[in-house]
Image 1: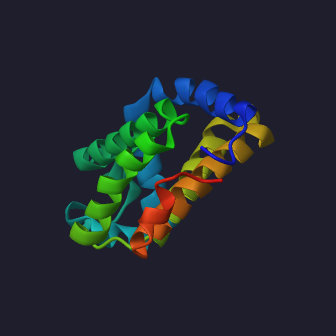
Image 2: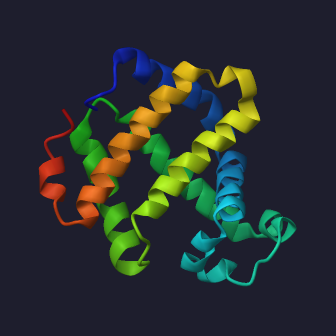
Length: 163
């Protein structure tokens, strides 16, 4: 994946191995934080429209389910970082569904990616080093650039991979 160095990839893989051990709880934390920090994102989830508190989010089984989906998608991407074609194959149906079916604006992915970084920072403190954070920012930039191109109907240019 283009702008990622081997050190970046190792940072991501090492860190991800720890985070993915508890994918369900970590995914749930990410979704709750997204909804708390960006309540406007809840409008895309019909099952969360009437949820008004963090306590309700904590108890909502669908929050856990969606968090697990996010973690599984990220896991597939991390596992395939060395093959952009596979990553495109993971992102394309995800982008199609979010754009066409759910009508989710592409900037919501940027909010999600920033939320993930913030959850990592808060939960892991000093062990989420500047170097690890920068590696994740690079991954999320690559993913967002692809998604943004897809949303503007120029995804064909992304299939060859980032430079």
